[in-house]
Amino acid sequence: MGNILKIDQNLKPFNKKILIEGDKSLSIRWALLASQALGKSTAFNLLKSEDVLNTLDCLKKLGVKVKNFKNRCEIIGLGLNGYNYKKKIILNCGNSGTLGRLILGLLIHSNSKIKLIGDPSLSRRDFKRIIDPLKKFGAEFKTNSSKLPITIKGTDKPLPIKYNEEKGSAQCKSSVMLAALNTSGETIIKAKKSRNHTELLFKYLNLPIKITNKKNFDLIKIKGKKKIKYLNYKIPSDISSSSFFIVLTILSKKSKLIIKKVNINPSRIGILKILELMKIKVLKKNIKNYKGELIADLHVKSQKEITPIKCPTNLNSAAIDEFLLIFLLAAKAKGVSTFNNLSELNEKESPRLKWGSKILRQMGIKNIVSYNGIKIFGNPNLKISKKVIIKNFLKDHRVFMTSVIAGLSFGGKWEIHDKNCVNTSFPSFLSKLAELGLKPNK
Image (tube, rainbow, N blue to C red; front, side, top):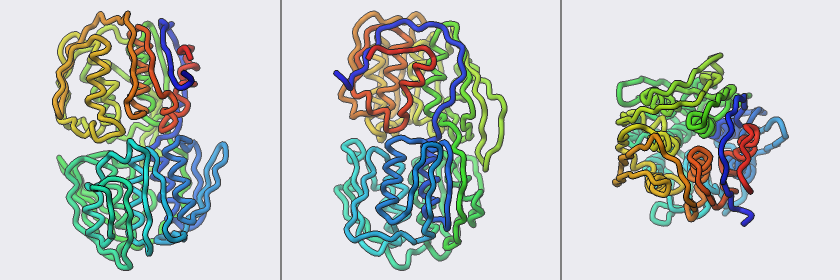
């Protein structure tokens, strides 16, 4: 029972300020780019989650010097194609699709075979979407039906490519961008719009990148073989992690919350735009530009009424990690909410669209789910009085945390398994709840 969380309590109103840990996407990208830079790069507020720690461990196996202190992390970069490693090494990506896909882009110049493995959840996820373009650079792959374990062997002369990214996957786009750094010539990417942290980091580092923003896609041109300077960075707080507390506050009674210094990159704040359409206000104050990223303090308060929504599909990519939480808001809306073109949710750590539907059903909320969408019949008076058990969800951290927010918001007796899975992305999740005075039964 030590890895099971039990929730059986009513929320007391709160009025608090909190600071969330560093952005996971930026933490991983900083580490990978720092490993390709020349000299010492330093990051503050680096997320110390399992995904990021696995990234640092992989870099160490590739010969990169990493010093991880309590308040900062230092990486001594080896330059482009500077990795120095033993033959037949194995890189364990754990649960991180971001790490698995992005690091493959940096290995297209590897001179011997490197094997990537991951946990059971990552091992069921599709890598074909990134293997195909990386093959065009000249890399060779041995795979298990395009899934982990994967063995890659690079080429002495990687060639620039033209790549059409049609899924709105920032991971695939970023992997190709990182691969382009090691090529002679210009790589051209036509990418469906998705989060743009990699592009902003490239610009800050003065790498030769040209971006043309179109209505439905971005055209990205990258010239390789330019040396990367060291990157000192203070990682802003993660909007995805912050979203759990945004939704908790909205669903609580007579509560207010300020979340400090959150990354509000326009390609990541789909949830805030969706909240606006549901007539929910989250105020952004003290907005600042930090090395291309926008940062703000988010002010949230309880909401008595929630408007149902027909969610615009053009917001899907910018809210892909937050839809389980958005479903909880739809559960309390007065009317029917519909969400479409969400098949990408089932390509995450677990089939999240299916799990979102299952959680709602256990809460007593009628919903109709299809392969790529869901219709949710909201109940503004929802109050759960029965026992709810959440288990066998492939240890998906977002399924766990969403279940906790649901239990604290709607009542009932919840038994949620595999609480240690929060270490994947948000190790301090439960301690942040304690800061708000919310103490789930252990």
